[in-house]
Length: 471
Image 1 (cartoon, helix red, strand yellow):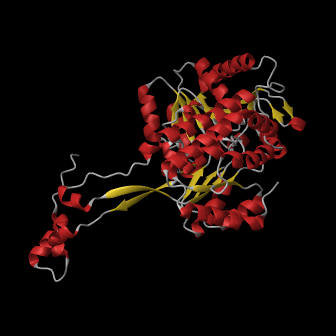
Image 2 (cartoon, rainbow, N blue to C red):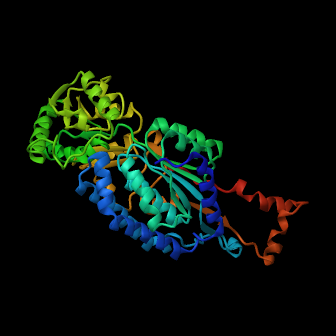
Image 3 (cartoon, rainbow, N blue to C red):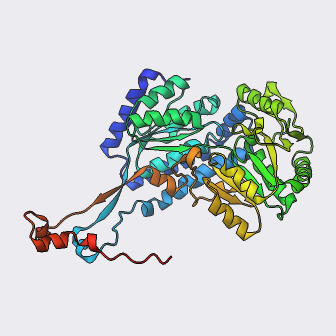
């Protein structure tokens, strides 16, 4: 059920009043809320798995691994590491400035708005919230209307574990989200697509609200011709099958003379993963909506490439099996937009140079995947391409590393998340000095009128020696 639009300003105002009361400031209080979030994920895991399965057909093991377990682990670790993250910092300064007590306080930004997507609805709702709680912020959660069962469940279970004076779930679609974006927030965290991100960014700009955009784009895979093609195919297919392909990777660039070997390896591993096919397999998810299913089948109907692994489709159940298409050329329908489904185009190239140029001619992706044992190839890709992250010799697994920031660049977004990186997102570094009265004799030269000696001392930085560049 949608939240009443007229109630949204009152919800925001109530959360802001709670924040200003100071109740979220003590670290033990924040740690308690983080542990409560972990308890919610653990205790309600069956309801969560059932809801996500109903909305997305996502297998239970996949939900427990990629969403429930990750939320529990990161909430607990964040609570444990919070005292270290929140420590006031005293930067190292020259001796003459030390009496000023230069200090960096870790201050919560305030009241946040978190708008989450449908493809990983739990982790991409609560991962930002973990950082907001750790930082001492209050927050509104706006889950996606495309996963209605899960979104309604959140509205029911979140208040049972988290203080509703600090954290609220708002449900609805465009009218509710539009109203939320009219309001002023202290930080907005949006995960989704670039089209909506532009709307969010425009709304945030009216209030000069800081913003995190976690977007996507067409994340490519580059395969070095010298790499083990069979292993690359196995790892790429595993990544592509997660969430029925409604994530990364998006397309493959491979040496032309290795394309058929790659296709054979995909067919081999697909048969091993799904001996009876994926259409009815409980280990393979569904497409989120009829609209997205039609979009994917339309892309396939217009491709000029050669379908070499023909995935069956069942529109009534929003099912679509993994489909591999080779000899996909620039300008093909499968390269028009982020696929976000179980379709994997293979683009043959004649050299690494061509692969790099192909990637660089497009918007910066969220992730660049590359399969190579050659360190010079790896370094070249690091140096000559841009992407939110770069992953060598696997797909998807980078998300399991708690210490790595997850972020885009350019069209794939900006701002960081995961553990301390999310905490930092919702934290203001508040600088301070405390000038002692005893410093007055040393400050005398700053007051006008200035003697020639005072001017010389005050402008000394202008005449500081600059070291040679060494080039």
